[in-house]
Length: 146
Image (cartoon, rainbow, N blue to C red; front, side, top):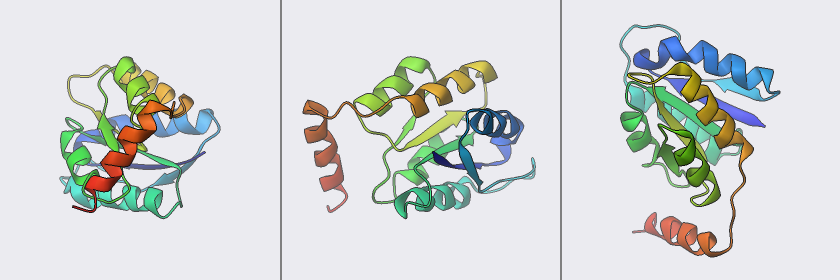
């Protein structure tokens, strides 16, 4: 799977662990940075990774900032993106199986790095369950035309 990855300065310390995990699992990583702890604006990075998903350059994306919230808000402004902030494994499971989330946002602050790695694994391993959930995802897509 091709995974777009992006982080801001708050996600910098987690980036190498996540990228290494993705590569170890055989995924191709398309890295959109940031490559340091120097302050940057998360919307700039979220948009690059999400545009890769929308244009099908990437299959999914993983975003990291301090809380995951800023990245997810920016990501969800892009039509075709369904980004979920996940802070535990159950959330990652539901984001994929019920919501067909195509972008994962993680928090780097006050979060165990091993928990984040487990969340990434689940997010990438699970498939969309479709069925009754497809109706809801279609309704989410329709909101983009509002």
